[in-house]
Amino acid sequence: MKKLVSAIVASAALLSMMSPVQADVSVYNKSCKACHGFGPGPKLGNKADWKDRVTKGMPALVKAAIDGTAKGMPAKGGNPKLTDAQVKSAVQYMVDSVK
Image (cartoon, rainbow, N blue to C red; front, top):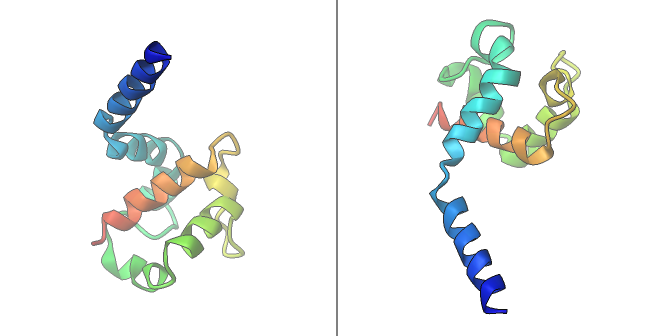
């Protein structure tokens, strides 16, 4: 039992040291950047592009990113292999870029 507890504590410590920004950047770069960096989507870091979207709140933004939008954004940025958590992480990265 002590070994199990030690392993859980060690895993939690390792996870806490991992930077969530690295994961966000990786997902963004692989699945979001084509549209949100160079294409038709609201641009990373452009406060004017994100102003109205951010006011809707994270749950609405994440739902739109997961499900896609009528304006043309494909579900999960066109990468169905992404988990909902990865999508949320990328959305958070983009929202953080305009704060």
